[in-house]
Structures are given as C-alpha cells and as structure tokens.
Length: 325
Ligand SMILES: Nc1ncnc2c1ncn2[C@@H]1O[C@H](COP(=O)(O)OP(=O)(O)OP(=O)(O)O)[C@@H](O)[C@H]1O
Image (cartoon, rainbow, N blue to C red; front, side):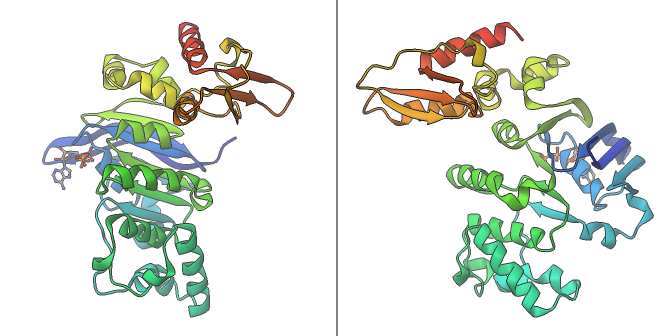
C-alpha cells in the first residue's frame, strides 16, 4: 500500500459568503507529483495554501503525514513542507547564501552543515558558486527561481508545495528549468503538490492531475485517464484544443508496442536507439531533429524485443491504440 502524505476530506473555504473551494477531497501518495490545474480563480492557490495553513479551511479535514494539521503548531507543520511561489520571495538585503541559510539558522544547524548543504544544493540546481555572495536584485529570473527552490529544499522537507513556480519566467527559460527540475533526484523523492494553469506543464510533470472549476474538482486521475476517460464535458472540452499534443506527452512507445510495425531499415538511414519508455512526443522529436538524413528509431527493451520504426509508424500505432481505448 502506498503511504498517503496529504489528504483533504470534504474541504471548503468560504470568502465573503462565497465558496472559493467547495467540498473537495483528494489524497496524495508519497513521492507523487500531484498537479492542481484549472482556469484562473478556480481555487487552486486557496487549496494549496490550506495544506500549509496559510489559509484555514472553513470546513473539512486536512491530514499531512498521518496527522491532522490543526493538531500541531503551524510553524512545526511548515518545517515539513517546502513552499515555492511564482514571485521572487527572497529577502533583498540577504545574499543568496544567507537566503538559503534562513531555515537552517532557524533550526540551529552548525555552520559547516549549513554550508555543505548549500554547496550541494546549488550544484544540483546548476547555480554557479560565484552567485552565493550576490544579492537577489542581481539574479536573473531563472536564477532567482532556482535559489527559491534551494531555500525550500535546504532542510529536506518530505513535502513540497509549488504555486506556479515557473510562471514568471519567459517561455524558453521556463521549458528549460521545468526539464531540469523533473530530472532532479532531490525532487524525485518528494511528495509534490503543484499549482499550474499551464496544461502542457501539468502533463509533463504530473503523476496525477486534479482538474478544478469554480471551487470544485471536475476529475482527479492519471494524465492518460483525463484524456481517454474524461468524467464529463467540462474535462473533455478543457483538453480538446491540445488533446493530440497531450496524448503524445503521456503515451509511451511501450503503450503502443503491439501496433508498431517493424520496418526494414535502408542502408543510408540514420538509426537512433531508444527504449520503449520514450513518450511518443520525445520519439517524434528525435526523428525530426536529424533531418540531414532520414532517421528511423530502433526501439529495444531489456529483453530481446526490438523494432525499427518511422514517424509514420508512430502515428499509425497511436491511431490504432486510440481506437482500442
Ligand atoms: N483573501 C481572499 N479574500 C477574498 N476572496 C479571495 C481571497 N483569496 C481568494 N479569493 C477568491 O477565491 C477564488 C479562488 O481564488 P484562488 O486564488 O484560489 O484561485 P486560483 O485558481 O489559484 O486562481 P489563479 O490561477 O488566478 O491564481 C477567487 O474568486 C478569488 O477571488
């Protein structure tokens, strides 16, 4: 059985007689990337802030790591929960190193332990050590967001709440940082609840997605479930515009394996080896990226299964797969 780290049970939050969050329930397992997705004003941020008690629920129960969040001082709860928001929340008169050291200092860590941890983290987050002594105003948006993350991770909290963490970045930096973040081993072990209104981001990063509208949950499920088994018209329509692109993010070569046709490779073709774990979009990208010569993919798993495929073959396999959903 998976260990449930965060559980919301029939939670409501009312502002000025209007429910911003209306009777919602979900659980997040240890190590999950749980995404709160939805249009502006649907209650995502309110939901996130209730988990670390920045906002109190009007009704309902919230359990974090087996304990009702009201049964402990808010400060104690927040020590187990890292929090990253869209805006730069670094203290302007503290250097980068001093900013990251805020929590270790509160926890009375000795200097050596704090410094060792800071050096490890900034390396992992691809920040140059020369930035440790500069002030936040001198950082680019991407650097500032990495420092924000370092500060949230420094005491190794088991849970991380992120509210549009890439929202203030330009598209290119945003995509690059998002990719880096998904590969960080430090984040892989964590239970993450992340707010976004960016559908592609939700599908690239989420192990499960909770789609909200007007304070209510429309559907919670794995990315593929939302695409192939939408509960209602709202869910269907929410994803309709980007549907194919999203399918290519969530469906792997392994999923369409039985429909992939093994083709003979001509001599002058460029062969790229991939595993069946590649998503269809990553596989297509590889074929596109090598246009000087025709590219085919050699898909090999760790037994002796092997198929040589083309982009047309991937499209064909996807349409067969979709018909069988
Ligand atoms: N402190 C507050 N006082 C009054 N109303 C509030 C307060 N905070 C949020 N609301 C209202 O609650 C609703 C949900 O807000 P929330 O910030 O949770 O939405 P969101 O989905 O995170 O939106 P966005 O993506 O724009 O941040 C909105 O109608 C908002 O105006």
